[in-house]
Amino acid sequence: MPKTKDNPLFLQLESCRMASQVLNQTKERDRIPQLFLGIITHPAGLGYDRALLFLIDPQSHTLRLKAAKGPINRIDTMEQTTPTGPEDLETVKLIETHLLPPVSNAWNEYLGGFVLPIGLGVTDFIETDVQVPLQVVIGKCAFNRKPYYSNNVKAVFEPPPAFGKEILKFERLAALPLKSRDDFLGVLMVDNFFNQREIGEIDLIGLDVMANLFVTAIESSYLNKKLEESTQLDGVTGAYSRQHFEASLDLEIDRAEKAGKPLSLLAFHLHNANRLHQDLGWYHSAKLMKTLAESLKKGVRSEDMIVRFGRADFLILLTGGASVENTMVVGQKLIQELTQLQSADVTPTRIQISGALGSLPACDLSRPRVASMADKVLDLAKRQPADKLAYLKPKQ
Image (cartoon, rainbow, N blue to C red):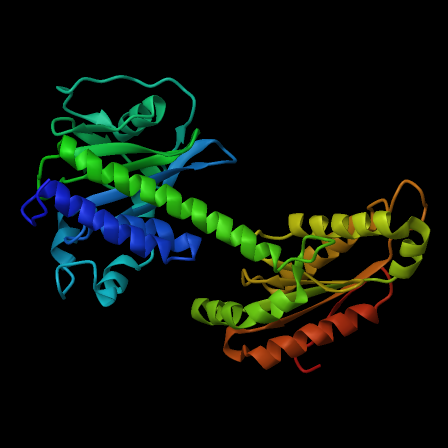
């Protein structure tokens, strides 16, 4: 294969080489889909009009839109401008300016109703069909686990009436399965509805390489996260360590300030930890502490941080911006659930636990203020009688 800029395959593989470098340098798992789609739609990348990523929701076992890049309609094409700068992906500034914007809310509004169950049969269609539902095109790729492309089929998606949006149309399209060994992860779809550039077999090579790079990047980020978490977790309970909490404060404060949301802390103290340890022994008391941590995790959002702050203390960093009233309700419910847990089959000792909460608005956040609030809510929790939850007033 001649190494020339006039060779389409060479240009695609060169874009894939740069994509590999960019994706491998990305440690944040949430940024990988947008980086991936950004390279596919970048004029100096694969240059497609639009790219959509459908991934499996493990709970409902359905395909849903994860990320999308490119204009929705011709009005968007006039509003979007080609990034300025050299026409290659070597320039870090060019990558950052074009590839990192958040997922467009408009795409979520249009395709928010897209749901495709996995494992069902697929309705077949022929190349002469004028319009084919988008679900059928994605379903064909998902069912057969094979790439598909067409320059004749026109895929359409009609948002639910509640969304009140126009029908989406896709032309000159290709769909590729995303696979990790024997696992099916989702479908990548691209199209050239606006530039009308036809897609051929040679285009599938670049897209297939890019899809494999995406899967590898996702797997690597997952393994890196697990490795990182293994050094940040408390060995007994599986909750985050105090060191991780202190190391993460600046990042969590920055996120809360940008979102304009308060940060809240819930603290819990196990009053009879020594008695339980004596009655149960090390193994069963450690098992109990792990059960307490798991119960706390189930009672809050997955984004919230559960921290083992001391031998008999837990701290929860709530990042969702909940009001003090709602946080009080969550705290009371958690105390009720924890006190109802059996300490162990070998002892009738009742779990005695109390709690406290504090909250700081986004305009009043700083590392010293949050660290001070953590110490104060823990101290307040220790001073409460069993089963009680106290509120740390702002001036305390």
